[in-house]
Amino acid sequence: MSTTFTCQNVEYNEVRTPCDFPGCSAENRCGYCEDGFEVTFQPDSIEINWNGSNAFAILKLLALPVSDCGEIALDTIPLVRQTIFAAINLPRQRKEAVREARVEHGADHATVYHGEFSDQDVQERLLRLDALLAQAEERGCAVVWG
Image (cartoon, rainbow, N blue to C red; front, side, top):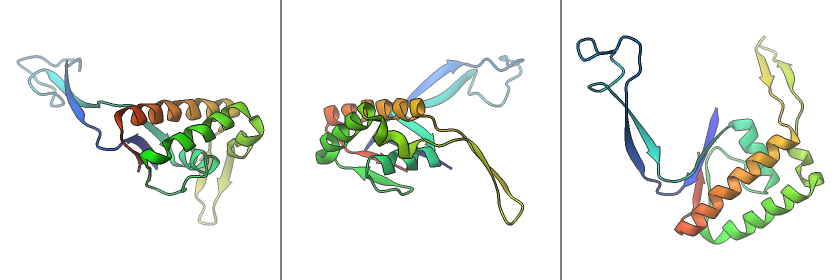
């Protein structure tokens, strides 16, 4: 599972790039493109996608609701940014979000691998989220995740 953070009411722009699939030509289309162009949709704002456990660790660190979806209202963005600033500058505040890599064996014989989430990883994600919040504040919109 992953969690995407973005500005509320984000718009997506169509981007067409020449198809580079091997063997794709005007006479023999690959099936992945439209008339020789790959079409993707790019957001007009910052969009962040993290795996669920990393997203939840950051949400918990910032005292935000740890849930599959939520919102940071425009009027609370300054407070969340202050919390990020404090966490970036105080290693002891980031400590609870840091985790070592581990393997978990479930009762149903399922094996779950939990990747490392280092202090540097936490700091990088906090900075990225702060950039999104700054952009949202500038645009006058909330930040949503889901």
